[in-house]
Length: 292
Image 1 (tube, rainbow, N blue to C red):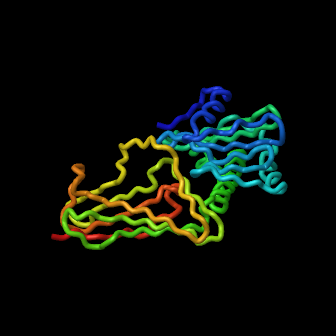
Image 2: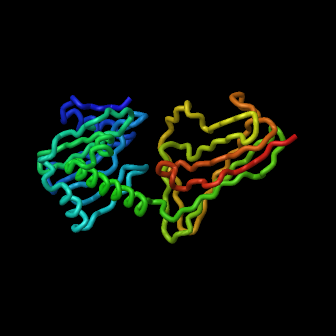
Image 3: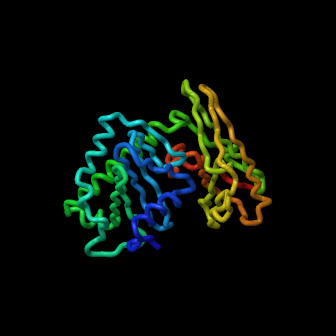
């Protein structure tokens, strides 16, 4: 269910934001300095809290829409251009609901502008952004959100610490005998002239899924979604012009949770150092067959 938080006071909402943002500690906002901006979202199908961007009083923008956070020091002109979008922001209503409908599982967008010691917070329902965009204040808020999302995406894409790294996924064969282990291979290459680092939320650095293309129907994911990983964050450091290999032997014959039979299968391997499965994405499946 969507988290509306419509009747909660601003102080509680502000505290909620700092306490619930996707397993990361959010910086304490300084009291002095220039205006600061925070944009985050709540709700959605999973009821998540997702911080999009934080711009501090020194003009440092932190993209938090992926893992890990990525920072960029904005130029004076860039910072002022962002701040100028908030001219008259104090005159906005505190909240915007859709006029004609109530949407389930829709994100709510939260904006905070903090000048000196006085914060102004506005939130708007995602349905209101879509349905009421002809209303001037809604249209203006929509534009601010687009600019901030684009800035966050650009920073994450251009300043991430693994920029230029490539990844290749393979298996050792394309045809296997029944119950023969399948060897997965991930080759991570840093072709650049600088050190690149990949960050992972836990020690587990990859996942894979397998789907049958012929009857009987089968879908398998490793690790399974019900496995809770409490290991510490990890990383892979790649010096210039080096590579790193990950190998995994999938011995499906000893796994009592599934049964692979003769047939053809598609496999997707995913490296977990990416944002929403877009970095290092395997475009085409690895196809393999199990025979007698």
